[in-house]
Length: 148
Image: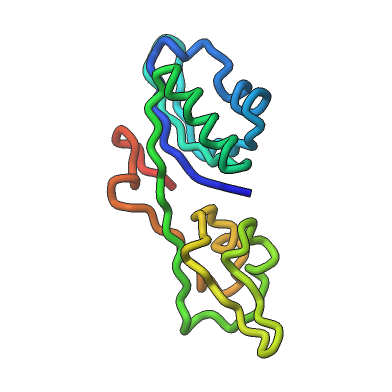
């Protein structure tokens, strides 16, 4: 599966359209709305996590583009504090893309940052808070509203 997080800016003429429904139903992607502010007849913004095949996600992005929705990938970065991590392996059970794995021979937790999509599941479950999710400075707020 392919998972990416996107910042979407909707033009006001799309405020009355079932855009998310079409992403799920017609483009076969799973969506997780992380933040949204959409009002009738006003420009809207949304942070959306999309999961599906790479082809389906690209088709969904093309559909959004056709509606005039501006999309930009929101790259979140996950990092691990090696001093805090005590190799419990809990994070490996929740990582949906296999960026965190357990090496059987020495029971070491391996982190492949290239595979990481920045979903943050490992951050939520880590018992010692060794995993940290950081957004670029540009994405710490949308239209003056801090992201939390």
